[in-house]
Length: 87
Image: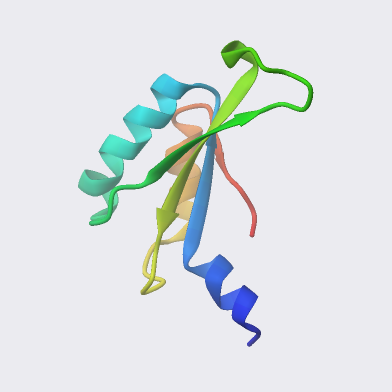
């Protein structure tokens, strides 16, 4: 398996509609999925937009052991009007 494929399997990116949803998801990841390392929050502005209202937020979850279920993460993100980005 190429190195890049292994990396993508060990990192999950949840896309959320706003900062509040991203922060809530980041806080709940530990309780629901046992994520030990704090997820990274990243503002993803839409092309040509610099207004925070037009930004999606990403929650980047490291999964070095590959133990997190992608389908469960996608369902979890959907509860907050988001989704799991496909690798």
